[in-house]
Length: 235
Image 1 (spheres, rainbow, N blue to C red):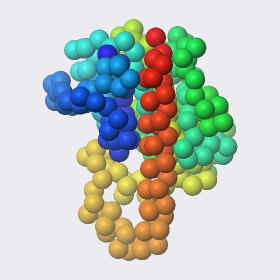
Image 2 (cartoon, rainbow, N blue to C red; image 1 turned 45 degrees about the vertical axis):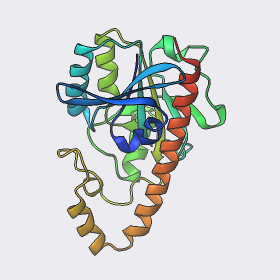
Image 3 (tube, rainbow, N blue to C red; image 1 turned 120 degrees about the vertical axis):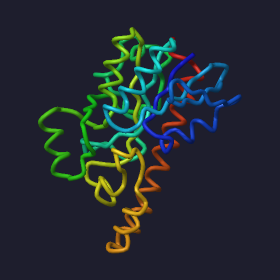
């Protein structure tokens, strides 16, 4: 079985709909969706947002089960200005050489980028901060879970490929403050807080709708890429 991780169902939903024979499985309270695609058995696991939640959930899963390999999938924010919404980003610093060098890893060259991914403890909102991180670290994109996933996979001798779809760019990050869009402590959006923000910032409606469209593009791109990878298989 192949494990595919996403932080949230908002990232995985397009891909999950492509699975046949879907079923929900719980391991010590950690939910996953099992199914098949192109004759391969896969487990879609939601890690939650952030290092702490991700570590707790994945330690439970990998203590209980053995997978052939793991694809760390989901969204990432761009730090480099050349990255656009819907571009695929493969993190060479977090991917196992045997998967990164697989002859079956064939993606659309014009929209796929290989580079360094940076994992941070919080959402990076400001354009200036993204520029600074890009210059200081050399990373082209940023997320909140992949570093932990790579550490856990290494400890369990599990090959991992890091595949991210760009959902927000270096010059166009988020339509509202991060704490309004997502409450990391609660692992969900606080819609009362979001509604209150929109009430006092009506101009954010337009930005939010534009952001939703960008997320839709990123989610579809990611599902297509995973479909292509699993059609061939990496090992």
